[in-house]
Amino acid sequence: MASHVDAQAVQWDLTDLFDGFDDPKFTELVQSAPKLAVDFSRKYRGQLCELSGDSLAAAFQELEACLIPLYEASQFVHLQFSIDTASTTIQHWVQTMDELETIVQNHLLFFNLELGTLTDTQCEAVLAESSALTRYAYTIRRIVKHARYYLTEPEEKVINLKTINGSQAFESLYNELTASFQFSITVDGEEKTMNGAQLRALRQHADPVVRKTAMRLFFERYESHAIPLSKSFLAIIKDSVQSCQLRGYESPIDVMNQRNDLPKNVVDQLHAVTQSSNTLVQRYYQLKKTILGLDTLTLSDIYAPMPAGDRVYSFNEAKTIVLDALNDFDSDFYAKAYTMFEENRIHAPVLPSKQGGAYCSSSTHRVNPYVMLNFLGRSRDVSTMAHELGHAIHAMYTQDLPLIQQHAILPLCETASVFCEMIVSERLYAQANTDAERRSLLTDKLEDLFATSHRQNMFSQFEQVVHGQLANGPVSVDTLCDLYVQQLHELFGESVSYPEGYRWEWLTIPHFISVPFYVYAYNFGNLLVLGLYQRYREHPSSFMKPFKQLLAMGKSQDPMTICQTVGVDLQDPEFWTSSVAYIEGLLNQLDALVDAPSESA
Image 1 (tube, rainbow, N blue to C red):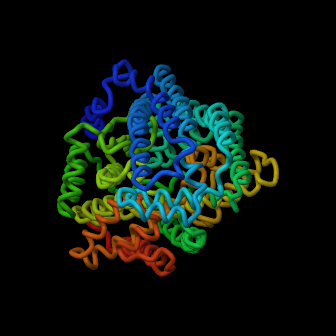
Image 2 (cartoon, rainbow, N blue to C red):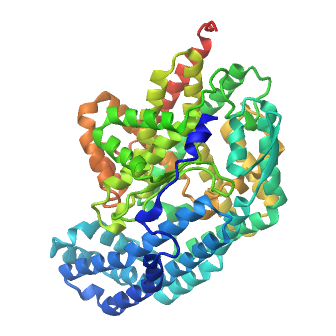
Image 3 (cartoon, rainbow, N blue to C red):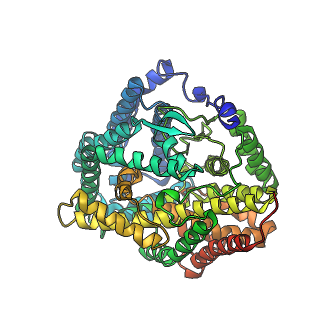
């Protein structure tokens, strides 16, 4: 297909970082990084709480000078790994960088630990005496606020070192093993070999037999490797639970709540509002079953394409759609997205050893972001392109901030990305010529919304149950499977049937082990943007300035304060219910199209 042909040529140029692993700059950095950290430690250890405000600001700047080259080297290695996970050379460098980061981290541990001994009064006093320190104020207050969760420096160092061969090693085992999976399947009369991402993409195939076969093969492979994968899962989650208890957090999810600087009641409210609207998911899939004319809709059919809705986009067509939509929205957004293409910062083709999915990677203000896609030409891939470019735009807006504040706090990470996705989705819908196309686009949008909000909410609830049970003792793999099936039923109800293989789906979700409780940020960001998008449509002329201010704030304030920039109170339940109402509006729109008279051919 044309989508594959022109996407093959879209590969990123990483020379803005390094020319390769043999680049002298890269070699020098790897060798010098520990020395920079040691020199910094010798200069400031034991003195931070005695420094003047200006001197403390200078210490922050020197700390960033230690970290900037390390961040860029780590980004370079992990970008390389994501497109060639089978390379033993790259695997070696991933391990080397993980070890190097731990060494540097241990040398710099004293910084937060010492600042954490300041009282609130001392903290405010030192902030008041230096205008240069103002840009670090939120960071310092957070360090002082979270000091109660720190252990002693020797204990923290031991934890960091043990992590390399503990939870981090289990995560590497999981990632490398699952990345090695290859699947043989007959598609359209042709025997094909696929990786996991390509196989999962067959959930959008028109033939229900192909969809069911693909997902059966996918889950069977994970089940056949259940021993190493489940051992990795349980070891990492148990380590997370023990760390939570050791540091004195109230509950496992509280670790992420503190990291996200969100009150528990806001997160609980997010979970409750989303769960209460699971009926929308169930209503949608009952409707989709009718549209597809199926007696039974299984979980392997939930992403089945709509009739006459299988348009394929070339990469260049997708690029034009996205850039045109962003240009109509805002010239700054367009210019930043255009830069990503002009500077060859996108990797688009599907490759045998490439990681699945898509992401945007940003490291420091010196280097613009990079975007990885697996472009197959579906309308979803057009939306994904917009989504990841939104992340890149967001990162570019924060480049004037200190390094430690550039990466937006997790619940706000999805703000620009989902917003760009919404803009492009509306563009695709406006360009549709038939009700069949419109039905297809609406179903794609609703399924993406449900996947990002309700599915992630289900994942988060599953995590809470599992972490809670592991806190009380061992949990068997069969129990994990049963707990997961319960959550599936909570979400989908009677709207679908449940193939046996889906009891293993929890084992295929890498976020569960890479960053426990990360997933609720997707739901948070999604519903946040739905609410913001409605405000934009109501008052477009007055919306953009505060919205750009929100993006440019990065992690310089807590999410509650940042959202007040655009007049949003995160503790107001009506804001979250308005986002759910937007989803219901799309569902009503689809319902009307289904009831509309059929079009002639």
